[in-house]
Length: 231
Image (cartoon, rainbow, N blue to C red; front, side, top):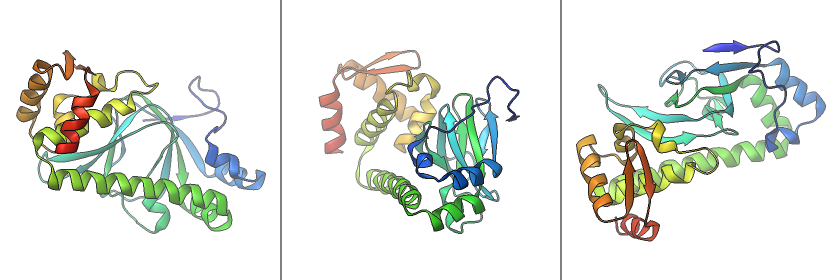
């Protein structure tokens, strides 16, 4: 982790995200004096499950992976975090620890914002509060979808869901599959790594996907979506 200053080449001068355009000059200044710009290197933790949460992160550049940690080495991947997204919004609403861990898939630049400053903006700026609450609800919806899929779908359907989700992140960000191991994909699907490898080969044999080392391309989206639908 590296704290960036205005003299660093990686420093980003302004936040272009729509939600911050809703702030008054005084509110922008409040954010400015309560933020720190940080560069996380690939593989570093942005947050650690159970750690004290006194801040919220806003992602400027890079991709990271959010996951729940279980016993031993078990984990469940929840989503891939892209630029323009917040990490740790629950800290704004009274949660004192992070509910999940986030690890950088690429070098990732963020603003670390004191949660007290963000909470003040939520209280006094209705439009900004609306955008924060909407993001929070979107995260919850994704979590509920994940729980439903893991509860009611079999392995084929779970893996199809995982592939379709990861592929959706590829929009303008390059091949995200190359950033993930087979275990990562398995942890998105909630199945074992061994089963994931076998099913990927079966999907390739059936002409649904194409495997090229770590890269995965979807060749027949309609069939994959039908597998996802049938579960």
